[in-house]
Length: 367
Image 1 (cartoon, one colour):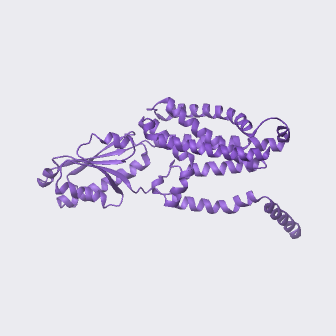
Image 2 (cartoon, one colour):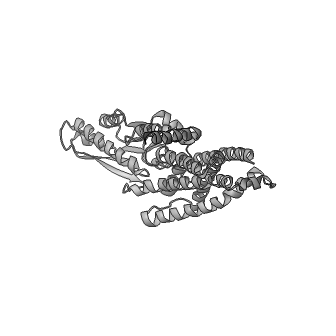
Image 3 (tube, helix red, strand yellow):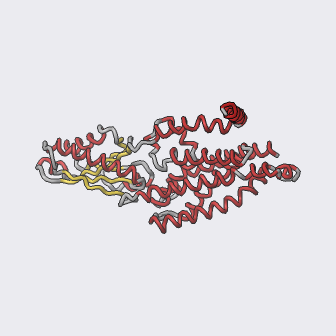
């Protein structure tokens, strides 16, 4: 019995040596997952972009501002005389939070009267917003205790004002990212099986005898998937609105354009993987690993990119879902136009062009 077990084991080792893709997945993926989860799985938020509106200009107001800056969580990005320009800063993503100190703040502190600070917060990312709000409350409480020289219940109150997501609903944060995640995985896997299916059935030999060129084959195979994926995207956003109360404040036309750009890149990547694989099983594995994990962990879907180590932040620039999720939240939650998210759309165009070239080159070799 032992000899038979050893024979099967040796045969399996020989098979793994021939199938280097499966060997790589079995050996390297646990290490990759450990590294990504170990570094990326963090709910701490750092380098929060803070705009300051100090209408008091007193020692007390400066001490409150310093308490925010010295906490290690906030970075001052703007000093304003009035709250009106905050609209532009928040729409463009220049600021994530704002501290508004009223003109009578110093006098109230000197007279030991109750006073109010306003903390404005971008709530389009509800998870980050909840964390930042907790930081702000703690900092204001500590600063007030120092100003009034009391231990408990200082008379300074931080009155939060959350924009774009007043209730800090997690659905408004998660659903757009979930839509991107589903579309990326399904589009890549669907087309990853396209060319390799021709190889397994032997019909690729027939295609070699036709006048088809590589780009024609790619477009012909990709177009039906693009139509189906676009319909799936429309259905997903409709369900998000119907079931999760996710509104679309921006233009439907711009939303459709960004979605098509994202899907085109995902389908192109799937075609490229299909040209690499020799079987549908390998194509499925490559498509799943290259689409699901980066989209889940390195796109900003769940974990803030700004909180990741620098190396992972650099790697995240090649993840197309990062740009789609950013543009999707800008359009759906904030209702802003392309003057804000044009760089995300340009990145999607660049990714789609690169993968289309790679897929074309590989298909030329196949034909």
